[in-house]
Image (cartoon, rainbow, N blue to C red; front, top):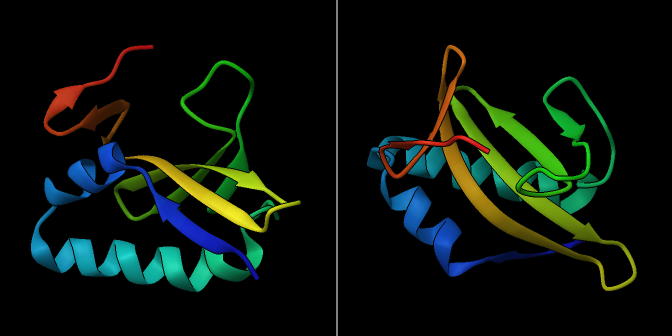
Length: 97
């Protein structure tokens, strides 16, 4: 079982979503990442080095970027974005690596 820590930037990212979507994202983070944060699935994948984080969780149009510390049983949410087609944005601004 993992503890979940949202960084201040991730909290600000989440505020850009509608209230109903915020609830869905929070519920999914709690349900999925609390127990299985470091297992790859169709909606959860390990990212290549050089990305925002080590892992990405897909929740509809939302993308949750997070790191896992298995020794500390800790999941750190780094950022939460919105993906429309091929465009990823954070707080209304398009992200380009």
